Image (cartoon, rainbow, N blue to C red; front, top):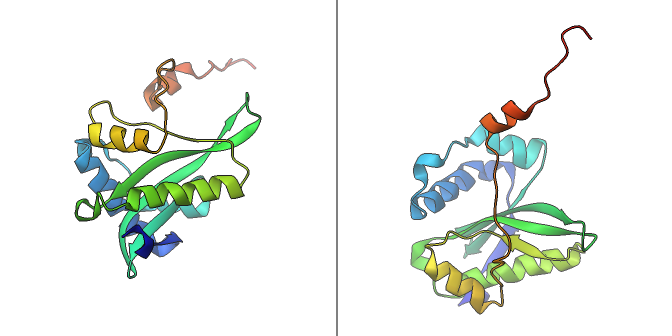
Length: 165
């Protein structure tokens, strides 16, 4: 039952577990070969120069899943929002209400922090997740496309420095 679940924010000592869950999620999404993050990188971005937060969901003190999120900002709303980067529940615990409990926790955080919305992406083929999200009342924004510039593309966009200046 989802009522048994406890939530806690990650601490520095959790970095190996965070990386394990990231890899487990990537394996589920058939993207394990894309995982380049290391414990050192996670420690830096989560704790040294905090740009994201992690919450674990636990049963009897045992982590069974996690969520990683950070802030975005809507100029139209004039409010920050939360962007959910990752949400993962171990396979043996899926279908028991724990994912919904995590969304409840994120909703609580968003409301407490004055956020106007919660956004995330989902792979097109992931029908179980799509069905789950829609059961929560989430809407697929068909009028928007996701674009990305890789680091290589970003480097090509850097302004050329005038050598004589």
